[in-house]
Amino acid sequence: MDFAADHNKTPEEKLAAGRIATTPPVATRITVEDTGSSRTWILPAKGGWNPLLGFGTIWFLFSSVFFAIFLFGNVSGIGNIPAFLLISAFLLIGVGLIYGGLGQSFSHHVLNVDAVELVHERRMFGNVKRKALPREDISSVELVVFYSENYKPVHGIEIKAGRRKIRFGSGLTPEEKAWLCEELRHAVSLRHTAARSATHSAESLRDTSSVLGTSSNPRVEVNHRGHGCVVRIAPGNHGKHVLVMGCIFVAVATFMIVMGSRMWLPPSEGAPLPFMLLWNGFCLFWCGGVSIFGLMGLAVMIAGWRMNRTSFQITATPDALQILESCGLSQHETLVPASEVQDIRTGLFQTIQSTSGNESSTETQHRGIIVLSDRVVGFGGGCSLHELNRAVTALHTTLRRTAP
Image 1 (tube, rainbow, N blue to C red):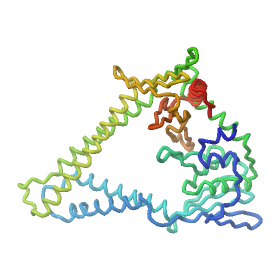
Image 2 (cartoon, rainbow, N blue to C red; image 1 turned 30 degrees about the vertical axis):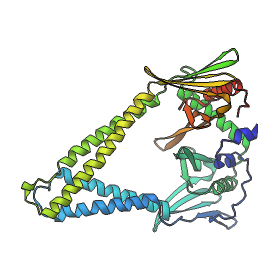
Image 3 (cartoon, rainbow, N blue to C red; image 1 turned 45 degrees about the vertical axis):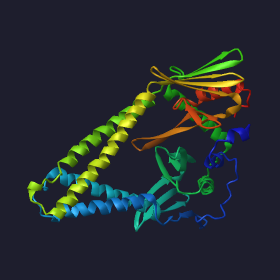
Image 4 (cartoon, helix red, strand yellow; image 1 turned 120 degrees about the horizontal axis):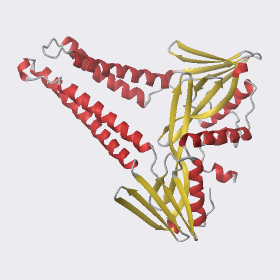
């Protein structure tokens, strides 16, 4: 049962649960200094180039050219406030992207634990950001999900002390995260056991179930019929959120296209021809790029509208599996023999991070996954894990498989 339960877990989740020994990684670059009265861990900067830094540099250079033209071109007709604000905003965005990229590559962390407090310092180019937590107030040191990347959770280390917390370490390897987590727990005299993890997971599951309203408004209905079963999944609220996001994208794109069109230089302005061609070329590039952004927003709107109306009915017998996807009057049916169903399990749907004052929390939502021989079908995104496990177990039992 333990092996089956761990099958779909990430390395961080297995290490956090204590299933793998958290010995110091052989190739780690983390250095430890122990003076007897205090213990210090130094996490060096990764260094090198990263995609955010490269993209930010290109963005900044491109924006700087047009900002310089705007300031020193001395061409009448372009000195209007909307155009200046627009180019300045682009320039500031480039500065922010470069700063974020530099932070990823060239910042290093120092943690120190003594008899009084735990101190975390983030250092980059001589700038030090320091945060201290009283040792006696520290209640937990855990691996938690910071965000998702390519539909996979990215974990980091979270140190909690009342309503205050320190978060870092998403760029470390799974072995380094788990080892450093255990080191910090030992240093601040905390115990971490699999039983405690199971209790914490159960509490999280209960909290998530209450938020999603599983007791009062369940989305998954499981009915057994003879030797088969029928699983019905009602639409959730995620479609509304996606629809609103798409509307915002379209509204922003429309505003930016209008602003870009006002920057167009007509020949009557008397600007030098090379400058006019360069400037109007930028306007065309700007409006074209924003139009693509608007079309993406329109696609997101359509996707949200469909998600808000799409329901699933999965009918399983010992011989076959039927998946009926309904969106209004439109229906799409998938009928496959039971032998073509390779796996049925739950998987990560999305992670939602929220901040309230000094408190930040991360909610992990799941979905059901049916792995066929030629494709993967997802269902029930955002449903409670309890509902999804019940549906997965019923389908496995009907298909005469061993549930994971």
